[in-house]
Length: 114
Image (cartoon, one colour):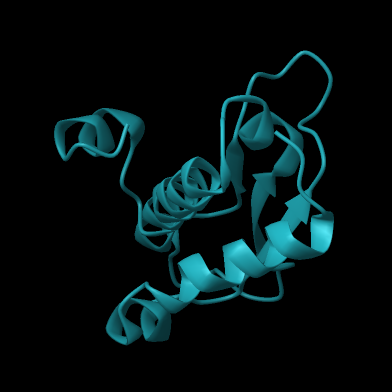
């Protein structure tokens, strides 16, 4: 599957538009970025780097923003058409946002997002 980076970034934006406003309002000190590929040797569609909201204490201050990375090429590599890409981007965005809120992979799997 091929898709321009611009179109892929639009789909990430569309997925964010589907996240309830109440949740977006609770997100703190986090940026969402599109990268072409994960680090060498990693088999990932997305990655959350940072300190989950549930882990932040009184001493959490002056740190760089957490990062949610959405990897374009691996997502395109598992999709057959535009509709598949839309669906996978949405699932990946929700998955990584959940990590920001302290929800781990096991719980996401239980909830049907893993």
